[in-house]
Image 1: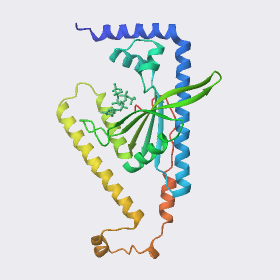
Image 2: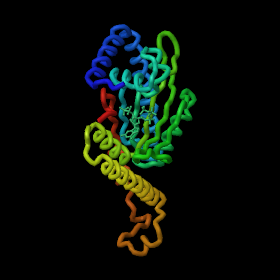
Image 3: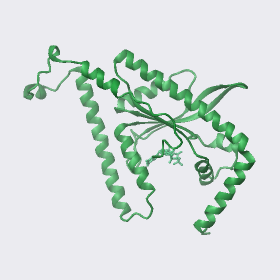
Image 4: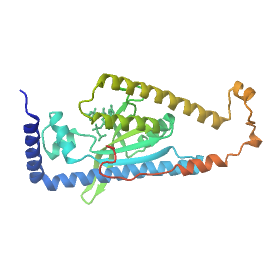
Length: 265
Ligand code: 0O2
C-alpha cells in the first residue's frame, strides 16, 4: 500500500503528540538517566585524556561531542525497526539514545582509548562494530561501542546504555559531509556522487595511515635510511627540540560539550 507522504507525516505527528502526552513524565525521567550516563562516560574519557597528558605529554583525544537523540528521531527509529512505541521499548530496543563521539588524531589512539575505557571494571561492553577494520560499503569508517554504565540514583544503581563512536579527525570530516549530502533529496547523479565519496573515504584512510607512520617515525626517531641520506635536516638527538611537540599537543586539547544536535551536524 502506498501512503501519501503528507498522510504519513500526519499519522506520525498524531502518534508523537499522543505518545508524548501519555508518557511525558516517564519519558523525561528516562532521558535524564541517559544524560547522567553520558556524563559518566564523558568524565571517564576526560580522565584518561588528562592522565595521558601528564604521563606522555600528549592527548589521545582531540574532541568529545555528545548528544541525546531527539524524541522525533526516537519515535521514527522505533517505527522503522518495527518495535512497540513505549518508554519500555525505548530502553529495551534502542541503544543509541545517549551518544558520544570521540575524535582522535590517529587510528591507533582510537583502539588504545577504547580498550582503556572498556577495561574499567564498572563498564560492560554490550556490542562492538568495527567499521574501521571492516568499513561500510560506502566508505564509512568508525569504531562503534555500545557500553552499559552504572548511574547512582536515589533509588539505587541502574545500568544505562551509551553508544560511543570513535573516529579520527579525517573520518569525522568525511562522515559530516556524507551526512549533510544524505539530506539533499533528489540528487542528480547519485551513483556518481556515491562513487566519488567512496574514493574520498579511501584517500582519507590512506592519509590516516600515513600520518600515523609519520607520528611513529617522529616518536621513535626511527627515520628511514633514505630520508637520513637525502635530507637537508639534521635529525640528531642533540639538535632535536621537543618543546614544540609539547606545545602543539596541549594546544590541541579541546572538548566540545553537549548540545542538542551536536552529532547531527
Ligand atoms: P545520528 O544522529 O548520527 O545518531 P541504524 O542506522 O541506527 O538503524 P544501527 O545498526 O543501529 O542502524 O547503526 P550503526 O550502523 O551501528 O550506526 C548508526 C550511526 O552511525 C548513525 O546514527 C550515524 O551516526 C553513524 N553512521 C553509520 N553509517 C553511516 C554512514 O554511512 N554515514 C554517516 N555519515 N554516518 C553513519 P544515526 O541514527 O543515523 O544518526
